[in-house]
Image (cartoon, rainbow, N blue to C red; front, side):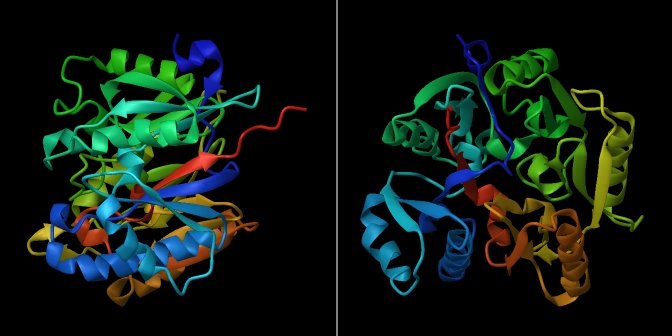
Length: 347
């Protein structure tokens, strides 16, 4: 029996977390291994920021535990370390998707992982991370029969899922499955009722269009979306098409969406490739939001994004961190994190 048949569902990211899991980067697998020190500083800043709101478990390869622990020696916070071997550090994509049940129990989905369409070998250790986390926690496991990354979808907790065709229908993931079959798996394993299919992700995104760079739910019926108003920018047509889809769509409960628009940062190139700068790669924590900002030419846009999120989430503290520290490796705050929801207390 699948999770839906057994009554499990995926809660929205803004629901209460017991902790956040994050994987420590592996220098040998980095796109730019010479930047390991700078990337490490970015991870330290991120872990420290999250620990201001909730517990953090940092997953580290056994032979790096002593070194990584030493980097946090002067930081007071709710930070723990767990030895699990991994190839790469993007836990949103290769970690488990946690589920809840009304009876108070938790479970987790173990998706198949193939390094974003077999782009980065090896990925065998990464494919084993999710079951090892679930075993460590003693949580029930559902092995899903399809390749899926956590950054490729968002849920609203009330039956609606948001994703992109560019990623989920890419032949480098599940070429044997139709759109309808993939949608049914999402319904069965996340207990959702409706899938909102956006078209493409941002220009330069090597994940093949992960939705966590372009749009997310702020609450049921409300979507936050990064947009571009420069007609000379590749993201103009991409974001305008997705915006058009959202204006026509309704959620699983028949509601029209309120769409909050956040203007993208200015275009940034590195070694001939566009960096996927996105404010939408923020992460909900307990009573807060961890927001990547980019500085320099993006300073005005940084301020506008922060202001919009403060207005959208007046009850949450917006905690900014340097979004440039790890972006050259292909992702940002949301890509590195995986929330463990607090178990429901049965009365």
